[in-house]
Amino acid sequence: MLNKIIKRGHKKVPKSDPSDFGSGNRSSGSVSTSNVVVNHASRGTGTGAGMMNNSTQQTVMTSVAAPVPAPGTIENLPLLKDVPMAERQNLFLRKLQVCCYQFDFNDTMKFVREKEIKRQTLVELVDCIQSGAMKITETNQEEMVKKMIPVNIFRCLPPASHENTGSENVEPEEEEQYLEPSWPHLQLVYELLLRYIVSSDTDTKVAKRFIDHSFVLKLLDLFESEDPREREYLKTILHRIYGKFMVHRPFIRKAINNIFYRFIYETERHSGIGELLEILGSIINGFALPMKEEHKLFLVRALIPLHKPKPIAMYHQQLSYCIVQFVEKDYKLADTVIRGLLKYWPVTNCQKEVLFLGELEEVLEATQAAEFQRCMVPLFRQIARCLNSPHFQVAERALFLWNNEHIVGLIAQNRNVILPIIFEALEKNIRSHWNQAVHGLTVNVRKMFLEMDAELFEDCQKQYAEKAARATELEKQRELRWLRLAAAASQGG
Image (cartoon, rainbow, N blue to C red; front, side):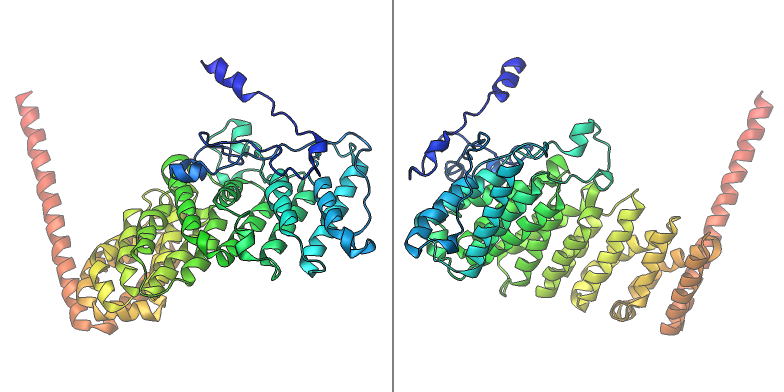
């Protein structure tokens, strides 16, 4: 069975006849997939299309097979500006057909002339769309967006770095950065798509026929590219699509949601989580109030669980921005967010703990008194553990919370609850923490509490002394028991 699957995976895709280009038959090279789901760009399965519903899956189209030219077959066409206006649309179409040819960029000595012709043609098409020098017909728009652009960008991505080496234990941030060899052409194709989307000449009603759900899913699949330049273009393009095509907005949010689910609960590997979160940060910023229940569910089910994966450092800045945006939009979500952070609080990863403490400060900055009171007991139990961390950066970062005036204000209002929780941790640091900086910061926090409420401080100190005396007494009794047991054992022997 395994051999059959491998053989099936090695079958070659038949190439389109170059003569099909220009025949006007835009369906050439396409394949009906009413009962088949094809994932074009993703190295895995189910990133985007595989997790949509059946009606959506049926719309997914296969990529058009890209022709490879024979040497000398690509002609150098005249510039659009050099031909009469009546001939420009036909010339534009011919230029699109030239840009459908694919080349091997790993071999720099092969098809040098043809590659340069294609590059210059792409540059001219970008300039044409950007300048608005001519209004592109619907037929040419369809040829460009449904044929030429997909042929170039919707492709199988190369294996990820860890797949090449066979080492699953390599940290994503330590992997060697991959750069797409075809980027000189690929960048121009992305630029062309971006200029088409943002152009004031592009009619949204027309364009949405070409930039459909299938197109969006394939763009999302490409976010797994390891080339940061490609992900940057994808981020900008998807954001512009979200802004211009209102009909696609719920679908885009759902598709991104599915990528996050797969990353959190299955793979914990995806190159584009940071870029997707950047898009979402802008989207969340534009949410209307009162916030829809759908958006709150997204926060609870996708964004907060994104604190769980090990490679959080690669996207934490963007994630933290999204989380804080939610709290700033609706302050009542602060309790939900803080309890979510506590749920996924790292146990053994100190660097991750430092990130959590930084994010916690930003969330508390936007938290009101009522929400703070709901979660302050479990929160400061965790902070007390951080204060005593042997990793000085964790302890130091926890103590820095007292540098924030808003947080100090919240603590002062609730000092009767908070000081008894953390008093023992402060005393332990002063007596035994190895790091001088942590020791000094602890002394400052302790002094702050003393000035805040001397009577409460003395009560806590008294309770701590009594607790320490009881612990000492219990330890003495325990030692006496062991001595008696040892004596009895020696007599019995």
